[in-house]
Structures are given as structure tokens and as C-alpha cells.
Image (cartoon, rainbow over all chains, first blue to last red; front, top):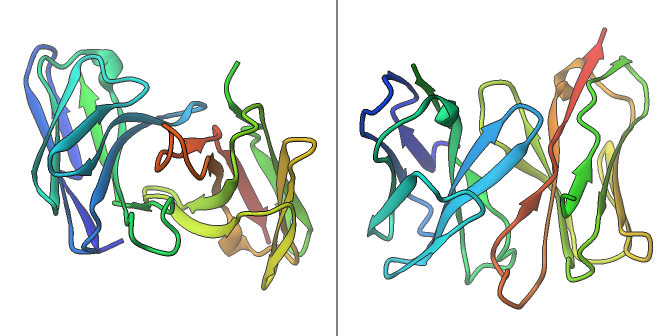
Length: 115
Length: 114
């Protein structure tokens, strides 16, 4: 979905490196989310933010941190990457004021490999 | 035990077949049910949603919810090769501390071959 963009799309890094994944949206939504996807495990919520001043941990936040720089931008950081953080990462947005308040719109994903 | 269980498949069917995809859930607070479709190397996109028990139809797709059994289904009629994708069920409560958060199933990989 071009309304939600993620950079980079692919990244290979080494154990111990700090990595930042960025998400931007032009949908005007107030809520943003970060998920990771592993084969057979579906989507697991890492962090979510219901507005710029509201940041919450999801199911699997250990080893990750986030920053909500603006309503349209939500970044995910891996402070010291480890191999089991190799996964597909998705950013998503939703609109608390919309008709379908729980519907989330996903970006194209970032494929991260930690060697 | 996961709150939402979905058979990961993979499921392979011939073109034109009727496909049935299913999820079960354990949290009776879930009131909003969705199906997402995810093509290879893409993000999930919303396919269908429903708030209530019963059936909801959209073209070749029918979403069915049975809250008494905590069971939801997605039926695809006259399946096409372009339906080949991973299908994820998702659900959420409409209030409470989990409001705004979706719980996803593991996803079912579907291949429709010509």
C-alpha cells in the first residue's frame, strides 16, 4: 500500500549492530503499529502507538524500541541485533475516528537478516 | 494455547474449487472479525470484515462467524490462480484494554493451480 511506506525494504546486518526501520504514512491515521512475521507464527505485535505521546509494548517488545517522531512517522530500533530477530517486519496504521476503527493498513514490509 | 488458531496448510486446490479457510478463537471478548490476504513479498491487505454472527458475502468471498462455537470461516467460490496467497484471520474486542489491537491467526497458505 503506497500510503504506508517502509524503509529499507531489505537489510542484512551483523550481530550486535544497531538497526533502525522507518515507517511513514500519508493516510492521516493516528494509530501506528509494528509487527514481525515469522513462518508459521503469523503476525506478532512488537509495539503500538495510539498517538504521538502514547507508546505501548506489544507481545514481543524485548530487544526492540520505538520512536513516534510525528503523527506520520513511527520508527523501530533494534539496539543490538541478534540472529533470532531475522524476520519480516511490518508497519501498520489505523484510524481511531474512522468507521472501521480496528482495521489496520499495512506497509510493504522490511526483510531483515541478522548474521 | 494461542487465542486464535488457524491451520497453516498449505492448501492446494484446482482452479474452480470451493475453498474453506477456518479459525477458532478462545477469547469471548472478540467482536470484530477480519480476513486479510497477503501476496508473496507484500503486506497484508484487508479482504473482509464483520461484526456479527452469520454470513457476509462479497463477490466470490463469504465470511461466516459463529460466536457460539468461537469459529470463523472464509469461503472462496470458483477459486482462481490469482487467489493464491496467505490468508490471515484477525479479530479484536470492541472495547476494553485490548481495543485497537488485533490478534492474528498464523495464516493459511493457499495455492490455486490452473
